[in-house]
Image (tube, rainbow, N blue to C red; front, side):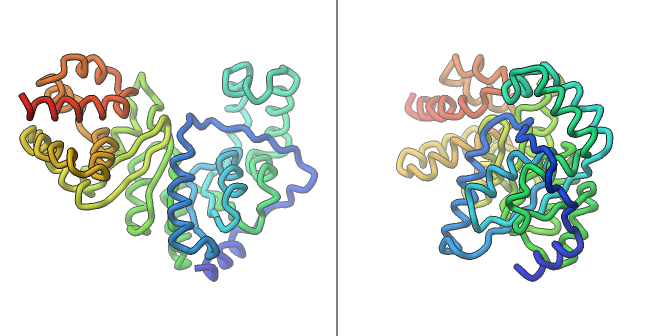
Amino acid sequence: MIDSFKQLQQLHPWPDVSGLSAHNFTLGGGGREVIEREIEKIRRTKHGTEPIFMVEIGCFMCASTRRWLAKFDTLHIVGVDPWPESLKEQVKKYVDRPLLNRLYPHAEDQTRFVEDIRNQGPKETGLANIQAYQDRFIPVQGYSPDALKGIADTGFVPDLVYIDGAKQPEDLEGCYEHWPTAKITGDDWHWGRNYGYPMRKIVKKFALKNDFGIEANWATWVLHKDQDSSLLIQAAHRSDLFKLQALATRCHKNIDFEEKLGRLLVIYDETNLIAAGSVAHSSIEMTLIDPLFESRAAPLLLTALHATIQS
């Protein structure tokens, strides 16, 4: 795999970013430690010494990239981002907003952030943030999913894919088509409340279609595939409360499976969740009205199912 990584390095060389100002700015909404846990799992299977390969779709200022490359010295990332010129105007909207205020409390620093991106260029400013890791990061400037085919054509196969792009189903479908064995993860789980959480809909639809379970933590989500995931998804898809109750009973004797059930419940249609939960636990309906609390509601639903069985 290292040969295909080197081939991609030749196809997508770094620009000269020496002397450029770097800004470790992120739009991320939390939960990145879940990705680090998955990378650590992969690292252990490779005995801590073999290279770990990742595709990151949507890099922007490369803040998450920097975090992961700094934490794992065997991690190699192929980053896909168009870094369009329109970002020069877009970043002006971040001035005096909470995300930029946290990084730069002073107005003059925020102004410099905007000016650096305008003068240096979006791509160059982002890469300046990770110039210490040039040997382990490849900048592929382009749009997913088209750029994914070019990466796959070299024979490159990542261990993990992280999607933080345009919130389109084609990103998920393209990753799974090219790299069916890769762990698929992403961002924006809680983005777009006023629009019905579009990324959740995309991920849930994909997961149901391909028998994946979903783990969600703040903005971050991870797809898991195993036999238990398939059973739970099939039961949820049929609105089969009896099957869900049987699976909950099994949880009582299997701690690992209980953890899986807790994380996989986020895939269920909210209407089915409320119908199942309200059977024995009146407060769960209120908990599930706001999808932001789905992951917190999972243990409550588990309790409700146990109560239903015992009543």
